[in-house]
Each structure stands twice: as C-alpha cells, then as structure tokens.
Image 1 (cartoon, rainbow, N blue to C red):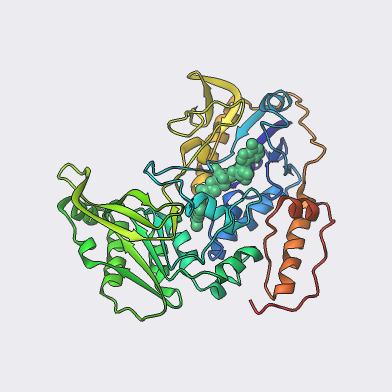
Image 2: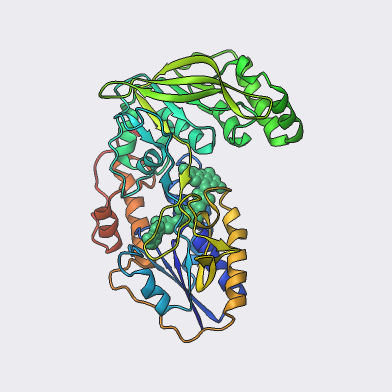
Length: 447
Ligand SMILES: Cc1cc2nc3c(=O)[nH]c(=O)nc-3n(C[C@H](O)[C@H](O)[C@H](O)COP(=O)(O)OP(=O)(O)OC[C@H]3O[C@@H](n4cnc5c(N)ncnc54)[C@H](O)[C@@H]3O)c2cc1C
C-alpha cells in the first residue's frame, strides 16, 4: 500500500488525491492535511461569493475527499506540528500543495497608510477566513480605488460596487454583510497600469458587470484607442478582441444614473498613496507603451480621490519550514513536480498547484498539473514500503467538516439567509466538535 501525505486541501491537493486514486484504486492511502478546519483552499476562501457556479466545484472535490481511501485532516498546520521531516519519515511520499496566499506589493510611498488594504486581506475578510484581522471601514468616504487589471481586481471591485441586498443570498459571513450595508462608497475606480489589450480580465467577468443592478460602468473612450502594438495584440488574440469590444460597449453606453459607478481606467500607474494619517487619494502617472512595448509615463499625471485603496496586484508563495523555496519566483523549485533541493531531485518529495507553478490559471489547471506530479510520483514509487502514516490527535476529520457545514446552514436561519460562513477559529472548532449553538430562533433581519 502506497501512503501519501498531501499538504493542503485546495484544488491542487485534492486533484492529486483524485489522480492517485484513479491510477491505484486499491493500492493507495492518501492523507490530505490542512491548517484550516475547512477544506477546499481558495475555492472557499478566494472565489467570489457571488460566483456560486464556480464555488460548486467544491461538491466534486468533496467526493474525492470523502473517499474511503482518503482522510481529510483539518486544523493541522504542517511545519508547526507535525514538522515536514516527521511527514517524510511516516509516508512514502509527501506532496506540497500549500498554495501561494501572500500579497505582492506596489512598492510605492504611502502603501502602508491606514485605508490601504491588499486584495488578499480584503478577499480573506469577505470570505470569512479565520485568520482575517481586517476591520473594513466602508463608511468614511464615497470613493474607493482598486489597483489591478485581473479577475481578482474585478472580484473586489464588484463586491464593493454591488448593492448589499444582492449579496445577501450568498454565504458571506453575517458581520461582513452588515459592514457592506454601512457602505457609503458610490464610486469605485479600477486602475490598470497598461491598456485594455494588456489587461488580464476574462471576458465573462467583464460582461457580468453590465448585469449589476444600480451600477453604471464607465470607460473613457480615449483609453481604448489602440497603439500599433495593442492593435496587433487585439488582431491576434480573440479573447483580447472580445474584451476590447465589451469595453467599447461600456464606453458608448449612456449612464443610467443608478447611484453607484464603476470607473475602469486604463493607462494609469499609481506612483503614491496620498494622505496624512489615512489614505485620501492615489497619485498616478498617465502611461503609454513605447515602440518596443515598454511602459512609459507620458508626463501627465492624475490624482484620484479615495478613502479606501485595494491593491490587487497578485499573489505569491511563501516559505514553509523544511521546504525549499525559490523566493524570487515564489515557488518550490521542481522538475515536473519532483522537488529539487540544491538543484537535485529529492526522493519522496513532490509539489503541485500554485506553489509549484505560481498563481496562474483557473481551478481546472490544477487538475492537469496534479496529473503531471502524480505521474512523476508513481514512476518513482510504484509500490509502498509499509509506511505507517500519522494520526494527529486533534485533527478535524471529514465528520467534523460535515458538522461545520451543518452549523453554517443553521447560522443563516436567524437572519433569513441560506448558508452563512462561520468566520472564527473558535466557531469553526466548536462546530466541528459538535458543540456549536443550535440555530437561534431570532427574527429574520430581512436580508
Ligand atoms: C481571489 C481569488 C479568486 C479566484 N477566483 C477563481 C475563479 O473564479 N475561477 C477559477 O477557476 N479560479 C479562481 N481562482 C484561482 C483558484 O482559486 C486557484 O487556481 C486554486 O485555488 C489554487 O489551488 P492550490 O491548491 O494550489 O492552492 P489553495 O487553493 O490556496 O490551497 C492551498 C491550501 O493549503 C493550505 N495550507 C497552507 N499552508 C499550510 C500548512 N502549513 N499546513 C497545512 N495546510 C496548509 C491552505 O489552508 C489551503 O487550504 C481564484 C483565486 C483567487 C486568489
């Protein structure tokens, strides 16, 4: 029997278990560890709450995690207790699938002013991540800026721009919904350093903005004029051409005056966050591409008022004690999933997902990625060696997770909502051990 430990129960870790089961149905046991009481990684703590179809991928992941040859071992932080060396001693193979959940920085003055928040922290807050210490304040100003030109920037801009009632049907934690209800933010400005042909939005997420009730999406037609290089990109990439077409539609539309506005600005590179004691504005350079494709300031500048700045400029991987890390790339050095220590393949150690290849791709990308890692693992280790595995006494197992799900379903009832996420370590642990309060009998709050 081959015994494999997987560190991380996000999509890449679970797809690893799935590929192992498919290849060795009766000859593999997989322990999937997670530091959190709840499984599914960024499917639970990243994917936007108003994207239920994508979130429902958790259902398929759950089938693998509840398979008799798989154990979910939640609330076990590898690197603290047990340490990686213990895992390596107790399993035939260890697969690192611990993701890349740190933020990248803008590296500009004023970045740490109060009111400047990384999208990683904002997403963790609205997703109910138990580590989130953010006390989001949305009632101090009418204007917010989101820096970034990818789908995460669009996710956070959408959550800010939507009417809270339109989010009440999601699993947002109750305290988050209540803060969103206090919001005075009427103008959300999204700043992309480059042009529409260089933005990394997917067309589906761009189009979806048009369906948000009470929201005008505003684009300056001048931002959509294409330089020669951008025109080439549009001509050769259909997805980029579709994005530009959607943006031209927004630029041509008459605002309906719905009360909230999302301004999509291109060619604006933030140079400083301005304010004394709290952020009040973002200073930007107006930019363009030179003939070699390099981003250059035009010499013009623009300052955009904002009492809240969300920095959505990417995720990066961080070190786990006992595991090598290429700090520049933010990944575990590897060759097709085999971990390299000092450039040499380290027997029995593998890596998958964002911590293998960086924070790119969609959820499904992790499945083909896991197939590559598992192929390497099984080529190296066709048979098990009688490894015993570990049994951490305090681990939250599959039954514990089902109890959390039950408690979350009950938590929505007093508020007239469906399932509502539990957002603290205490609540999650109490629910897992079956000691959470039963659903209250309070009056619905109309949400
Ligand atoms: C904000 C956001 C929105 C996204 N939206 C979409 C979307 O709409 N559609 C889409 O296709 N993709 C989306 N993605 C991308 C998708 O979430 C990722 O491709 C995927 O989650 C990466 O999987 P992973 O397993 O590598 O990492 P993660 O999902 O990050 O999983 C890593 C797991 O490892 C655990 N872990 C970390 N350290 C330890 C430790 N020391 N011990 C034990 N466990 C540990 C973590 O708790 C976590 O559960 C989004 C990503 C983000 C950030």
